[in-house]
Image 1 (tube, helix red, strand yellow):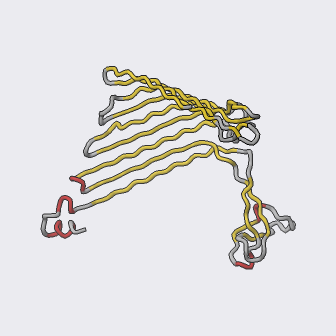
Image 2 (cartoon, rainbow, N blue to C red; image 1 turned 180 degrees about the vertical axis):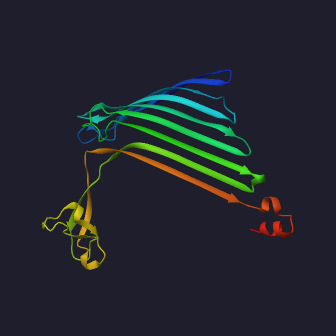
Image 3 (cartoon, rainbow, N blue to C red; image 1 turned 90 degrees about the vertical axis):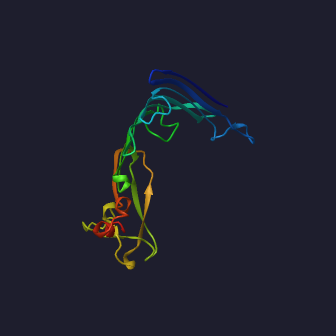
Length: 239
């Protein structure tokens, strides 16, 4: 079962809307008539304001809430509630410059972690793309910036001894206590030292992480403006 509803009203220079959609799928296991783990249900509603369609300079601000339900003890049970605020737009859009911006904030609430292998968290994400074109396309530049924050499972490791030469790590007893401690395993420099492999262990602990990306590129194509020139400019336009 799927449903979708959207109501939108245009005013002078602005559009206001309300939407609601969701899905419900219940699957039974034929052998015992129990509820399949593939069953799910969700409902999402939201409101938004945005610029009218067809505008080069556009924007959209939206607020959404979503509830998810998954199988637990043979019934479809409420497992999470999420709130999202998103701002996106193209404040600059012309022949020379283009700027795209996306910013979002999400708050996820998990009332009972026994029902789903996820924890409550707050995340912030932002992305900006800026393009600049000058001198009839002879100079083109693009800039990309991205920020992400959220929770990430804490990684724990253990080291297991294997046949000589079939591992990747070596044990160095730095404190001479004859106890194999996690911080005493290092990358093996030689195959005759490679006696251990590293195994990742699942944990129930999470840590706050922040990721940033920044990229800028610049392309210069002299032939776009100097292809009919002679002398030095004509020479440069060959590249």
